Length: 157
Image (cartoon, rainbow, N blue to C red; front, side):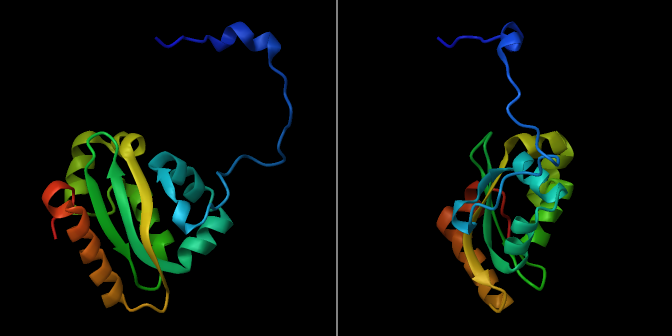
């Protein structure tokens, strides 16, 4: 059995070790291959427009995965065109659904708090901005087939 800790009991033992010069803006960019972040963590990074994250994600196209921690369903999407992954994910973080049909229905029913509490983002593939949009879309289709996200997830197309 777990123990409950009541931190107010220990307040007199806390010590301030540092006061940072500016408000916390989220963690440093971890590298494309290590992105596996909860919605609310990315939300802080995007709201603060962390320059390291923005530079990296704006300069890459790719295929991403959104996982729903509450039920295991997944959504495969892609970011192409001139705006890269940053712009595409910014849309999700602003709407909760990125205008995808199944996610739009889910967020309409459950609210934005559902996305904040349950969605996790990762990258399946990253590609150079010079990669053709057709190639990115073909790889997105590949991952939908591999992960069965049309049959068991949130993809419908």
